[in-house]
Image 1 (cartoon, helix red, strand yellow):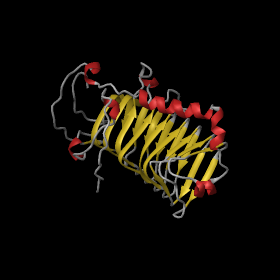
Image 2 (tube, rainbow, N blue to C red; image 1 turned 135 degrees about the vertical axis):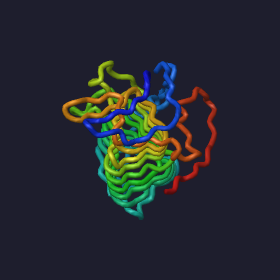
Image 3 (cartoon, helix red, strand yellow; image 1 turned 45 degrees about the vertical axis):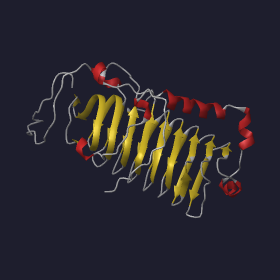
Image 4 (tube, helix red, strand yellow; image 1 turned 180 degrees about the vertical axis):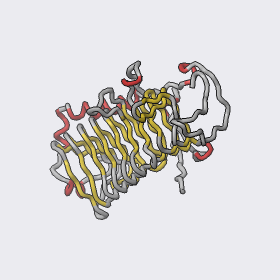
Length: 300
């Protein structure tokens, strides 16, 4: 906080938590690191330009059965919305790019391959017990993962992103959105519901309205877990657990009839439980040097 950290009763209930560490008073702009998100926006723009190009038809396929004819690195283009049920016999070649004009829905118990990119011009929904390794998922307006989906992936969207049920994004995963419009009355741009878990980083880098009620929000529900970090230029509504760090413009929660700004209630932030080998995304550095890293999986 800019002023200080205080412990307080809440509606007659005494403070029962704990705080350890040094509290420092610093100017927000000096303290808050910049996130260079242009490389992600460039990727979103590249996807959009493909849908508008005349060359897309040379990659056109009719249905999922044509996967057997594809090779590593191929590109597939579907000219209409797709609903797929994938099973353990479904094989996605390595490093392919799948582009869907419209909505993409995937369910089942299959594996989506390694280094596979899925791009939906509108919405994307993945459920069942689908798995993937180092996937890139991109959606234009809305993305949802549910059920027992388990993968390490980069989720990138121009709209809202929602994880629910027992979804598990393993390390190193990232969830990123740059939306600047509400979906109905919902201000949550990233929402971890139920028992969903992310081992990685949640990023919302856009500065929005100056008034509290205009802020976009990352919301972590009571039983949800982030093991890594949250970077948020809006509000963070934290009812769950973060094993790592939270950098946010404001904390938020609502209990009728009052909005509470920069209060943390019934939540846990513990950087000592973050894995020692955790690395933040490259957007926090202005370096253009890239190297291949060998990741250590997090085991409960």
